[in-house]
Amino acid sequence: MRILFTAFPATAHVHPLVPLAWALQNAGHEVRVAIHPDTVHLVTEAGLPAVPLGSSETLAGAAKWNDNFEMLSQLSDALFLDTDDAPRWERQWQGLCGMLGSFTPMVDDLVEFCRGWQPDLVVWDPFCVAAGVAARVTGAAHARFLWGQDNIGWLRAKSLEAGAGRDGAQDPVDALMAPMLERYGLEYSEDLLLGRFTIDPMPQALRLPLDVEYAPIRRVSYNGNTVAPAWVHRRPEKPRVLLTLGMGGRGRQLFDAAGVSFPRVVDALAELDVEVVATLHQAVLDTVTSVPDNVRLTEYVPLAQVLPTCSAVIHHGGGGTFAAAAAAAVPQLVVPMPMWGESITARFVADRGAGVVVGTEEFDTALLTKQVTRLLTEPEFRAGARELRAEINRAPDPAAFVPVLEELTLRHRS
Image 1: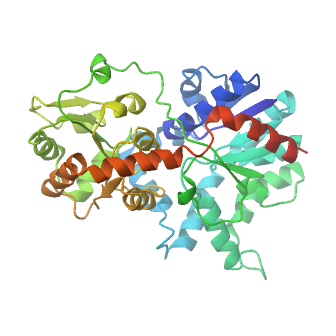
Image 2: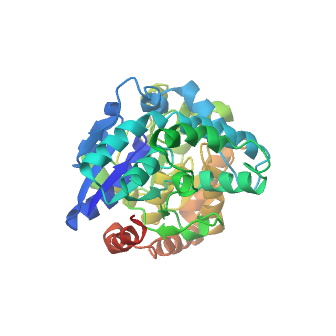
Image 3: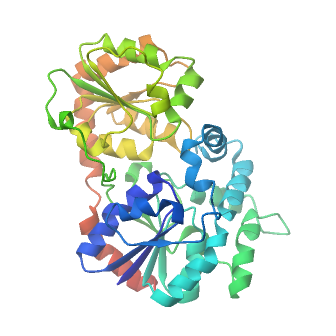
């Protein structure tokens, strides 16, 4: 088969796709990854063939959003969704449809490539709705690949329940899809927004109750081609505690929201009888003028390599960090920083007994050290982390998922 992946131009969206793309290549299938030209390196560094889409001017801001603190804060307000408490869901849905519309310029390039290459399956990022149109035009099967909870599916269901599109009611999906559909003479159907089926790497217990065909897959961590420092592979003499808050400005967001400086956090953790590893944006690391002897500061370290040697991890609730910690059976202290569905992920960790949740409104150094001490000394958390790993491992790994994907492609291809 020929499989085309399309990816939003950001590390957190490309990395989850890589293990499945590798598995498909290893099984003898042809794979391509379509992405913004400014971020093709994320694909080629993984040893995958990239297809640049558009020009550097197209989606220029999207390729840099993760390093832009102001843009990151705006996106957090617009995209974060707690489905247990969503009073602003209608406004969020309108805003999200507007954001999805910024990716519709990709459609002509996608259609042109698909017409020439003739993929059997198009696997697309939920933000890349143009990919479903390209698949429809060329008769390919197509599926979304989630990297977190299905906010788009949930908001679409709420919109339909509220009567969007009926009796003249406004439906923001019309404005999103109409320009692409008219260009290619297509009629709208829900699969163009939600895929013919959806590949879901989240634990089944975190899946939202939606009328969507989900195909579960185990999320396998891929952290790029960075070479880990030698100390990562040595068993530490003291319990190793990892503090990691994503690859962009999430750490700065946390410390600003909590009113606690990063140097104070470092000093507090250093007072414990542990080895502290803090991996944060360099701008945050630079605020520390004196580094305690039992603290390592680094801008980046591959999570999949360092977590197996850790006794606890402190993180922001991102899907990649959660999955890597769960795979390594490491107890988690989650300070959910809203971007997509971090609060639900944090509650899931706590409900499974695999960690604790500390909100930004209560975050301070005393509570932080107290909860880290609990993770290190109370055996129930380690047991809960092992049970969480076993639960996640029930989903097929990428290699085992390949025949599932082959069958789904045959069923859904025109």
